[in-house]
Amino acid sequence: MTATTCIRNAACVVAWDAANQRHAYLMGGDVAFAGHTLAYVGTRYDGTVDTTIDGTDLMVMPGLIDLHSHPSTEPFYRGVREEHGVPAMYMSGLYERSVALQPDAVGRKAGKQVAFCEMLLSGVTSVMDISGIDAGWIDLAAQSGLRVFLAPSYASARWHLENGWALKYRCDEAAGRRGLDAALALIETARAHPSGRLSGVVSPAQIDTCTTDLLRDSFAAAEARGLPLTVHCAQSVNEFLVMVDRHGCSPVQFAHGLGLLSPRTVLGHAMFIDEHSWVRWHTRTDLGLLADTGTHVAHCPSPFARYGHTLEDFGRYRRAGVNLGIGTDVAPHNVIEEMRLAAILARVAARDITTTSVGALFHAATAGGADALGRPDLGRLVAGAKADVVLVDLANPWMQPARDPLRSLVFTAADRAVQTVFVHGTKVMEHSRVLTMDHAAALAEVAEGQRRMLRDAPSRDWAGRTAEQISPPSLPRLEL
Ligand SMILES: [Zn+2]
Image (cartoon, rainbow, N blue to C red; front, side, top):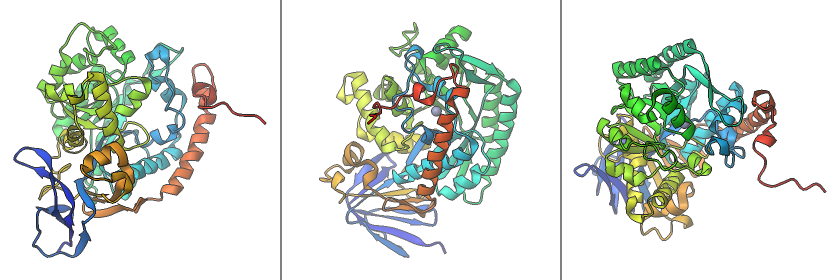
């Protein structure tokens, strides 16, 4: 007999309205789960209950889905990348940073733990973890308590710089092949893990770093195994220009020509599509291609907004029929704050407050991400779905007055009001404390790892610069 937990008389439940395929507020209700499955979402649960949680001051909502993240590396860039960009590369700091500043393998393990902790603290229950294959990844993912979609990344070439503007490539086709094979093997092991929380995503790293053969074979492998596929595509102006140089078309059009666009495909980040104001390309077909093929987009506003980039715009993509999910792609791994930024940027880009809403962003961060992963049993509170449940404290001062709890959460409180997180029916975070990992110890290791990464910058950077030269501190040092 599996134990049943019931959140009784919750002030607010973000329930799934199956008839209309959308979330709706149920003001006053019960949510019950048995084992790892939701047993009941409604006004009154009459079944046997082993554990009761008083829901008087709670909003019960589905766990959030971080549809695009790099947990192994991003925690090391705190204090480094927030204001780092290269104007001569259309503001993107991606290429300079990823070449010059690389955390080592020892550090990356702690980085993953820190990122996973940030996710649990902010109500994320599922994550697409796009990383290189490090030893112990599966064990760490299992230990975290999260639902992890492991996306082992590989490529036929690596970015390389010889100056401060031109994006170059170092090719190693055999490495790409080995990477695909290793990724598929790792995914099989993850899927077989007894936790039942691990799965995989086929992840050729970037549209510009993989050969057409590797991209095609990756897609075929994903189809054969019934797996999603993700690839970075249309993520920078430089990448757009490289694709025009190689193929005479936009990155999205190139992907479509290869047969890569499909309902199993998640593009990170599909921002620089043909109609984007920064590229001024002559066609207007990309958005239609994404919609017609059922391709999903992982939208991660923060990293791009810091450069001055934005999707144009979230609401327009939705209206065109594109399914979007929300990712972080950066530290902090806080999907609630990404929802807020996505809403604001969409309105700024569209010059229109009506282009999107908290309801649309919340859908993206839950059901949208779940659909992108081919998992209709995630991202919604409905009987039969997985018990990935987040309890939000409505009494938290940052939530008050809680007239519209999701607005309070997204525009004000964010993680401060996230009280309890259940994944697969197991409590993994409570009262700002992660129950599955040692956050403080991992943070100390990340700080050490960051020191090593910064120290080694001159040996990696094309101009031999120090980390302080690449990313100067926000204030000068006062010498007394
Ligand atoms: Zn990314």
